[in-house]
Length: 60
Image (cartoon, rainbow, N blue to C red; front, side):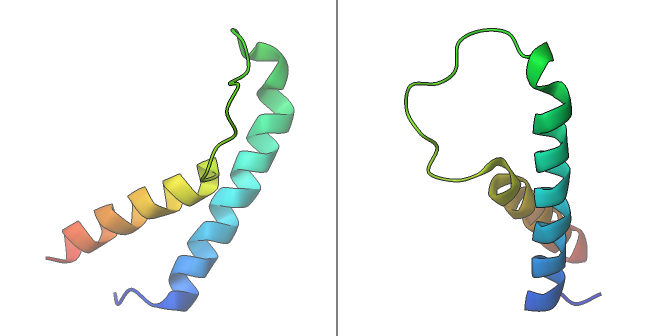
């Protein structure tokens, strides 16, 4: 299966939806202090990049 921009966009959309629901449902289970610095990338962007690299590695 070819990696296309549409597929990457679809993966990002799904991971972003998951991360939003995860944050809402599990916020009260988190322990520790919130980070003082703001993130430069969202969790869904990081997960999408990881999925992309695994996908490309499997095609080789």
